Length: 141
Image (cartoon, rainbow, N blue to C red; front, side, top):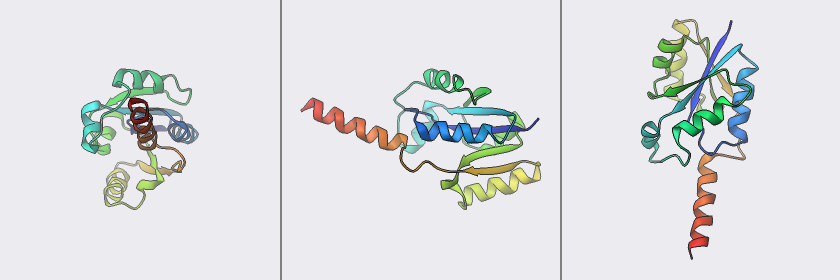
């Protein structure tokens, strides 16, 4: 059985999230999805709109997802030690970066691979958050 793993915040769930999960599931038998804790998201200088528990429930309800776990460490190699996945899925916007090149090398030593999936250009949680802020600003005037 081929085990896949991906992780993210999954705040303001949108079509880009769904595309990633759908494409990942097509390439593995079991898909494990790590949901980033609120504390870990703060490294981006952000705070999720949706609580961790609710984000986990939303992702758990997606038919492409077999298991949902808490991601409390950004190190994907540490996740491999926990879940022994065969393939790590990530958006292709990370391809070629030093961090992900290093993951590729470390995981290859363990017999796992990194699979870069198409990043959905039209929607992002950051964009949705910016739109919500604008709407709140207009409504508060």
